[in-house]
Amino acid sequence: MKNPNRHIETQDLYNDLIEEVKHKVHKLKEYGLSEKDIASLLRSEQPLLQLTVSKNYRIFLGEKRTEVCMEPLVKAVYLLFLNHPEGIIFKNLPDYRRELTFLYDKVRPWGLTERTLQSIEDVTNPTLNSINEKCARIKKTFLRVMEADMAEHYFIKGTRGEPKGIDLPRDLVTWE
Image (cartoon, helix red, strand yellow):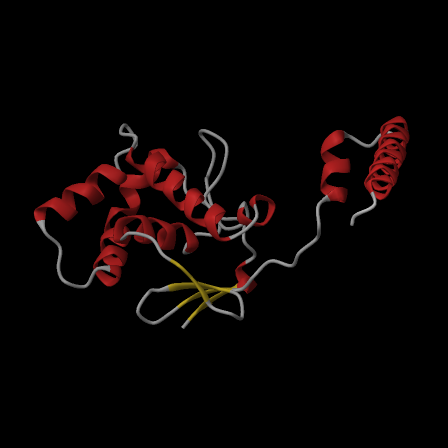
C-alpha cells in the first residue's frame, strides 16, 4: 500500500523548489537579464541535427535519418530557400520562378502539367497568399518531428519586407 504522506512530502518538495526557482529568476531580472534571456537559459540545449537532402530529393534529419515528408510543391519551396542562405524577399519571388520549376521537376519527376505550372506561378506571385501557406506547412512539418525551439532553425521565417530564410547553419546541410 502506498504511503499517502509520501505524496504530500513530494508535493511540498516541488513547491519549495518552484519557490526557489522563482526567487532566483527574480534575482536574475534584478541583475538585468530579460525574460527571453532567462527562458533561453532554461531550455535544454540540444545540438542541431544534420539535414540531408538525398540524390532523389528526400529530406532526412540526424544520424537516424528521420525522413521529413512534404508534398512536392512544399518540398520544392523548402529546397529553394535552402539554396539561398541569404534569404529571399517575397516580393522578389518571380525572379526565382525558373529555379523553383527546376526543383519541382526534380522532386516530382513525372512531368510538369498545366496545373503544376499554375501552382508554381501562384507560389511565386507575391500578391497571393500561396507562399505563406507553403511556409506554414513547412513549419508545421518540422514542429511534428522536433521541439519548437529546435524546429525554428529548420523552417522559413523572417520579418515582413525583409529576406525570409532558413537560419540553419549550412555546415549542417548535406546534399548527396
